[in-house]
Image (tube, rainbow, N blue to C red; front, side, top):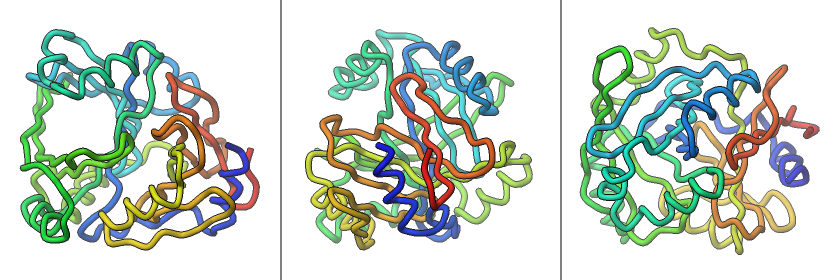
Length: 268
């Protein structure tokens, strides 16, 4: 894994800039067996974790480490019968990952217009479901809503698309008004272990209309605004690591996900 971080750093820069255009990285879903334990572990590494809430009808609750509009979501099952029914065919993967100690479940891509995004994907032959509504009842009593759309029959690590009811620029302004970021680190990217890195990067690039970048033997990446998605050869077939830059950035494993650090020239 260290070699892959070095390759990604050599590609240049701290990761793709957040340009608040029509599409950008939104968040990584980190499924954890126990939310309380994961929050303690994240805070022990040095992350400023924000409380979240419960998702009505989904049987899950969450917390988050938030950078700006982007964040790492800590997600756990709090009502198994409801979660099992809500997840449908996705439940076996959730159950397996939770019992194995956790891991990265998926990543979300923030879009400016959900209806237009779904129409564009379908016009290019990308199979995507109809937009669905989601909501959260936060610990402070407030509520939040969003719409999301999932790709059909995708790879395990594939993204979903999300919009919180505002254009990306307005959503970014709201994040700044709330005082984020709280921590001084930069999200460089995430790394997925896959059987064929070039094929996986090509597939993701086609979905986004972005080119893949070969960054070394057995590795390729797609530079999604806000987060590079790096593919390295390996058996996991899912995202296994988050790469950060910045002084004192946390390192170490948390519930099946590794945090790694690069200074864009050397990796630790």
